[in-house]
Image (cartoon, rainbow, N blue to C red; front, top):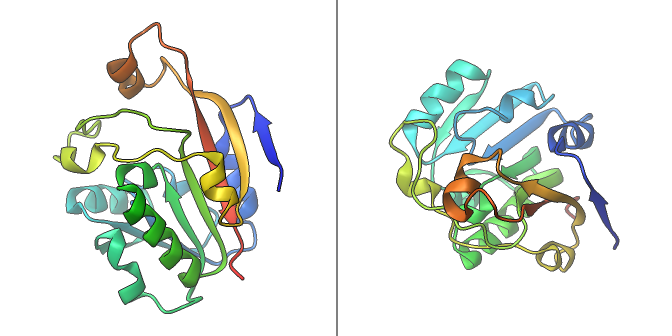
Length: 192
């Protein structure tokens, strides 16, 4: 499988294109619903372990909120019960083995596709809740993901060159104002 490299930052438009025929989406780690509100699916389930994020998400997007740790999705959802499962800026907050297991569960739950967006490699981000909702413990990055992590699982990958830069306050806090930007990955897979 080939990897496409792009220079722009508009990953949401690509995701919306991937979802154009989907009726339902489960957004794991939906946070305050900022990206979930952009998804074209009429049925939107927002899952997060931090209740204040879900309350805020409900005010921003028309969602069905689910307070649950991502590790438990396989206990709640039947195989192929949701068209699309997304992890947008989430998987890097989990230990690598936990993230891999959640991907496996998402691949069983999704009937059409799984979509992941994450920094490329390890982006050192510590406990900082930009929303001011007390979710600092959920914001620490615990793993880094590379193109190969997704290709070996059968995902298509788009690499967003120099995506994270000085316009991101978490990037500046972690790396400083003079640091080289960090790439991001958008990966998707249609379960078999």
